[in-house]
Length: 326
Ligand code: DGY
Image 1 (cartoon, rainbow, N blue to C red):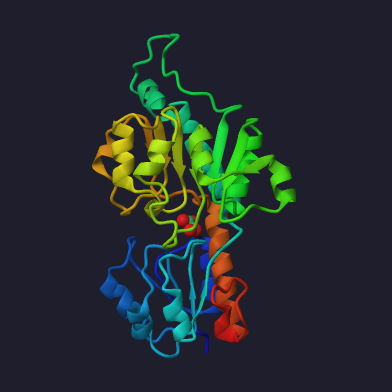
Image 2 (image 1 turned 45 degrees about the vertical axis):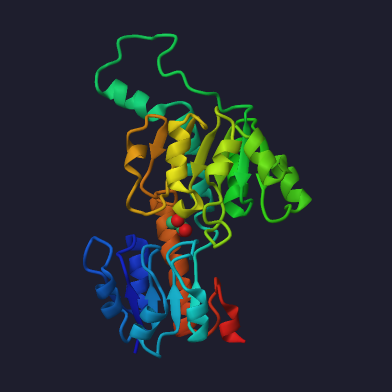
C-alpha cells in the first residue's frame, strides 16, 4: 500500500507526476487556498502533508492528522508557517526546499531593484497607454544602479546570490548578518561585513534576505527607515513581517526613503492600501521563486523528502528537526 499524502495545492506537472506515482495522493481540488476547516479535514489519516507557506501547521493540525503522521514537507525554503516544536514533540519530521530557489529569488530581487530605481513600471504603463509623445530629457528619469552601494541584510544563500548579481553592476556590496561570513565567500563577491547602522546609513539599496524569526520580525521599522538615506530604496523578497509595513508607508510619505520594491507583505494577501497609490513603489504578489523550472524543482525536493521518510524510512535530506531521529 502506498503512503497517504495530502497536498494542499496543485503543483507543476513535473512534480505532480512523481507524487502521483509514489503516493496515494489527495490534492486540494480547488484553485485557492484551503480554509482552515478544509485543511483540518484534509490531513486526517495522512502519513505525510505537503503544505504551502499559506498553510499554518501547528499542534491543532498535527492532532487533526492523527498519530500515523510522519512528515510535513513544506513547499518553500521559509518555514515560519510551521510550528517546529509541535512537530518535534509529536515525532513528525519537518522539511523545506533549500537551494533550488536561490538563483530564481535573487533574479527577482535584482529585477525589483532595477524596476524601482529606473521607474520601469510607470514608464511601461505610460508607453502602453499611448502617452509617449517623443524623447525628453526628464522623461522617467530614475536613479543609477551601477556603482551604487547595495546593503544586503542576511548573507545566506539568497543574499550571497544577490551579491553575485550586483557584482555585474559593479556595485559596492555591504552586508550584515549575525556573524561575518567566511572570508573566501566575502572575497568572491567583494562584500564587506558591517554593522546594521552602517549598512542602513551607507546603502543606496537595502535588500532583505533574512528568514522570518522572532528576532527578525520588524527588523526594518521606523528607526531603521529613518537611518536610511532619503535617496535609498528598500527591496524585500524575504517575508513581509520583516518590515513594519505601516512604518514603511509613513517613511515613504515623509520622503525618508526614495522608494521600495516589495514581493512580500506583512498581512498577505492584504497590502497596505496607501502603498498601492505610490508610484515609487513596485508591488509583486510573492513571486520571487515563480519560474516553472524552480517551482517544479521545489516540488521534486518536497517529493524526495516524502520518499525518504515514508518509503525508505530514513531521515529526509532537508530535515529541519533532526532530533526526531535521535
Ligand atoms: C519560500 O520558499 O520561502 C518562498 O517564499 C516561496 O518560494
